[in-house]
Image (cartoon, rainbow over all chains, first blue to last red):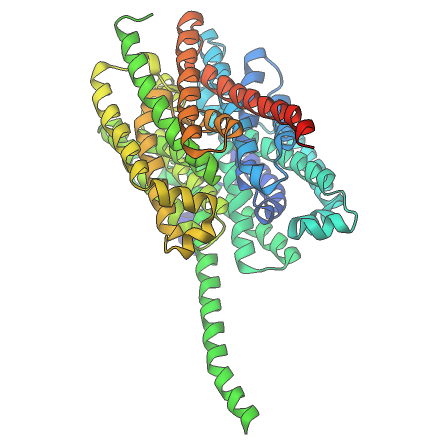
Length: 307
Length: 269
């Protein structure tokens, strides 16, 4: 038993300070992302969700350059980006793609400049990687408080408007006819999205912020159509995938003799991706058996009514 | 400004802008901005993998961008296409992060792959770039009519026997090839700006397809030429100018069309 235990949790896993921080911050971010993500997937705004991460990263690199607090840069530019996307027309289905694309293109140009200037002024090294990939293991414990507070704000905003938000997501026309301020609700949602994505990119890197936003929510929405249940499932998948990823990344140092030590984002993404594929396969299988049963039952019913 | 290595920059830049304008028109028309962002960004992982294995970057980029295109296309068949694109993208990026953790690649090279290195193009790179670019344009020309039809009126295209899925796959592969051509030159992130801003501006100026494609190419060319010149003069990264000028061209195009419409409206009423 003990052998199995040490095989799963390599020595020092539970005593490691970085692991504590990673588990705490990863859990908080995973929950915030999963909840906001369910709405993002339902609204078909994955592109905006991903782009805001890149926009926030541009803000982060700008903040790094002028010596501002990176959290302010990440969240600040993310919110500005969301506002501009809304102005260009992210709320309309047709213009959404383009609005997101234009803002993203401009933001990428800005990050090119900021990262270049940062590299040439030589203030810090590894800025490109840090901003693009980040690492949950390098997060300082001081960030936990900020992340939790801002995550709470984003969740509170979503909770506040969740009814009109759901209605305007499922059918904008009905929502508008019932007097729901569809545009305003959309803006509040975009701002919540910007805050949570900015937050998760600073905490765990831009790759993971998209992965945690879309993956668990998409898998949950494959499994159930009921929103409340999907929210719960997405949170569970997100948190478990994050923790499993942290564990695997920690363990990977002990695999083989080469001290592989693969990045934590790699493991989390692989776990999330596999979960999505499994959820997809389960749903497809259930749908197939359901059709077969219906095909089997219906002729019997037909003869029953005849007889 | 027009000597030695700068000449290479002008030639490859011109090729890249032409391809980006043509392919970008369909990206904007089809609403495929997300795949057009995801394929080049994910292909970056291929370049990292290639440097790990010690093979040519171009091979890594081509393989990964085509795999990415196929992944996005086949995942989209079963679920929402934006979700499929996001998942394929993060998977490729995660692989890239894993490759990078194994290499000793230093930061400037990563920066160059992401944001481009147009001023450092060698003359031996021109020929493969030109060849792949010609292949992209030829592919678009070959599927031009069904592609246009399925982009604008998908229902009519299906009724005429054009398989939407097949066209989508062909188009994604063209985007993948474009990626392989352009990433070493303008970088994984900036090819996106070049494929979105100028064609979007062109689309807001005219609704006629051929004219819009020509306009998109012209705007893309002027954007990239201006970016190269500014970058040469001020020594700032070319990517910054491409990104900002691309967005600015869209803003100007849209402003112009709004102004034009408001001028014409009273006469119409």
